[in-house]
Amino acid sequence: MQRSGRGLQRSGSKRVLDPTNGTGGGGGDDDHAAKRPRVPALASVIVEALKVDSLQKLCSSLEPILRRVVSEEVERALAKLGPARIEGRSSPKRIEGPDGTNLQLQFRSRLSLPLFTGGKVEGEQGAAIHVVLLDTNTGCVVTSGPESCAKLDVLVLEGDFNKEEDEGWTEEEFEGHIVKEREGKRPLLTGDLQVTLKEGVGTIGELIFTDNSSWIRSRKFRLGLRVASVFSEGIRVREAKTEAFTVKDHRGELYKKHYPPALKDDVWRLEKVGKDGAFHKKLNGSGIYTVEDFLRLLVRDQQRLRSILGSGMSNKMWESLVEHAKTCVLGGKHYIYYVNDSRNVGAIFNNIYEFTGLIADDQFISAENLTDNQKVYADTLVKKAYEDWMHAVEYDVTARKSWPNFNRHSE
Image (tube, rainbow, N blue to C red; front, side, top):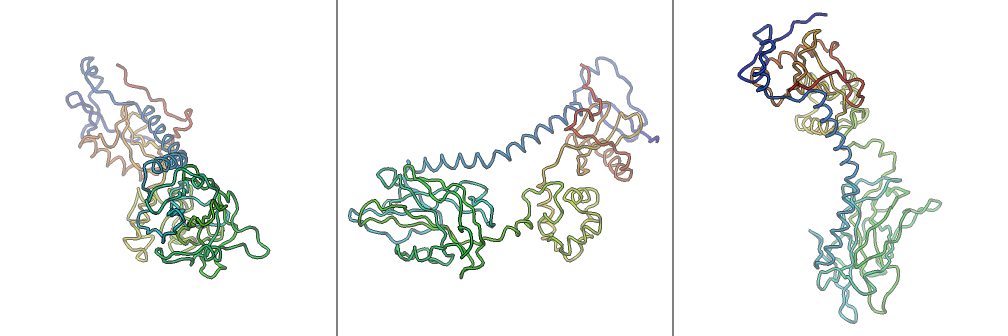
């Protein structure tokens, strides 16, 4: 198939794509070639893009580990610096020991919700769950003495235990709200059910709920902490508790949204699209089954995609849906639509058909660096590419053998 090409025109020492000329400015003399600014070759640019993508994936995989390490070091530093308080929380009533010591356990991390049976209990954004031992007289972490290295029991409490933050409780009241497993069931909470303090700071290990919370009065649980042994007669360490939370059956996890979504995820993994719901059926009926399908139509014909969802989706819902979809991590696949069979000029698209730049005589110009004339030319070429997409050439930068033979401009 022959397709008419657009020529190249030199402007000063800069190359410009001009839709008004049929041919370029020829080979040019050596002086002009020497002064012309070099633009990185497409293969080089794609490799750099792949490196960035790989780095992003590496950072994503390392993030939970780094969060845990940093969080643990922060806790150690806080313990040495002194005051350690929970924002927005009031301390329970003090417990006076014979020497005036008031000891209180506290959770320093909020839980990542919702929780599901069979899933790990974690802090927000996958962080570790930290606990501290405070002297409520001073608000400081207790870093010395036998209490600072105590062993603690991790327990499950009724969700309606001690609803009022300012309300104190007795040891008997705390124990009276401990939840055990249902008859004939496995232990309600499994994993590392003890944590040892070091200089007044501890990190909870792996915890997993084996049963949901729908069968108890409040339909919610709390995690609780208490000292495993008494240090001295007459001195009590006040127990700790988390906020109340619901534990759902793991089957509910099958309907969770993904953050970020993957290209091959079913489209109902996106916000505002319920599995087997009206929007899900409308999208499937139009051939949109995956997040990738959704993004591709969003790029090529946003108005059509919006009309498929119809008036039942409000503008606010639409904005949330699109915003979530755009957080998807793109792969290494690219497409090039050439002007003609000589393949000296073409438009480059990523794997969701989004225009990323032009290729001209083995030189790549990103969409952000196009001149005004080049942008006009690119707009025309992009529209033509969408209409004639069957002739776009696919390249996967993760497979080097599939790359086109692009060379750097000679010096």
